[in-house]
Image 1 (cartoon, rainbow, N blue to C red):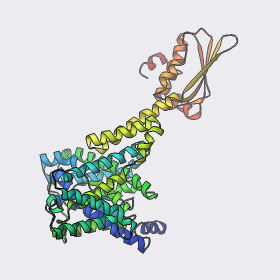
Image 2 (image 1 turned 45 degrees about the vertical axis):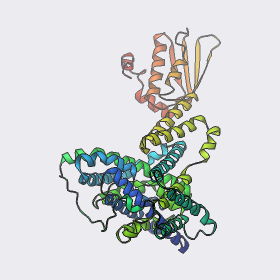
Image 3 (image 1 turned 180 degrees about the horizontal axis):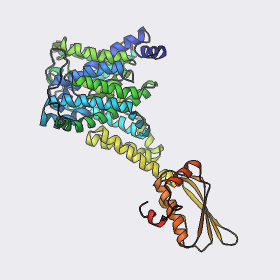
Length: 499
């Protein structure tokens, strides 16, 4: 690492004393919020709570060291937990650890292959839909803690929200979510309030994780079993991490190295498999908590991971008494803060295509509880709308010479698979004439479908006894035509059938 790179890396850890204090306090808030989440995700996956807790500790610490987005929180997530349930059910938890290791290897390879660049094809409407869907899912995830409970739970949640939103008016030196958790915990313990606690979610581990090699046969059969799961986990994890990184970029107005984040996620998951943890990725909820609480550097992520381990191993008995309503209040705050309320007002003013993409992304994510499916649906729909829009930009004009012998067609716009039908429909092949000139000076041929449509037009005119001249091809289009066109090659009629 050269001097400039080292200076940038150091700045991502520590800027000044005030920043460091905010990062430490933000990390503590995140650690408290991670505990019930990690336990809940372990329950979803059907494994011991320590699997999710160890994963959250390991992934947070390692991404703090080698990730590409300072201030972003990565840990065990529901998106990964739901994917591995069949693997654990059919083959056991040791295969989960092996699949997590392979997941890490795939993500590291994805980083070197620059798959992070695929984010360029995710539109702003998809990102907005992703954010809104996440906000809704975060709120829905709190509902089990708000059903079949006493009025005390609702009162504590309301009190927690009041503290979270009103305390910053007094001071911002301490994150208001941390104040809410501390005050409500004290009130619960000393007031003897009957509410659900962290301990009700599952038993906390009492020892630190240790390195071990998963007890699975080192055979191709094992690879055959875990590879489909590892591939899916790797892709979903990278997709969610890249989307979350983009959101944190926007929240903090700072850039991130998404290629490095791919590699960092891979390294974290690779190591976590050897520590008895499940796979994970970036968490938008905890990342928003971190940013809203003042966390902006790698230090906040490191503190979140280390303090999480300290809480569960050293302060386990105390942590188990934290009332769940206090954490529900924090997550509701995250849900409200995450949702893009402006997107509702923009439904009328934005192009209808953008609004449809955003709404479809939200609906698919909320309906399936699968972020990857929602984003994929949004990206495909965005692509279809874009292709349709570009297709309409293609125009054709024509004119007949004074003597009626030459018809000239002027093509303008983009010729590709979606506009080839309009290209073909522009010609009148039955018109009697000696010569046709196709002027494409203002057009561009993008793919073999475009070249194929030009071939068909030329050959149809020739069959009618009309000479054809194509003029104005730009350099890139001419290269495409020279390489793939068949109208100027022997046996053109036969070749066209398979074009």
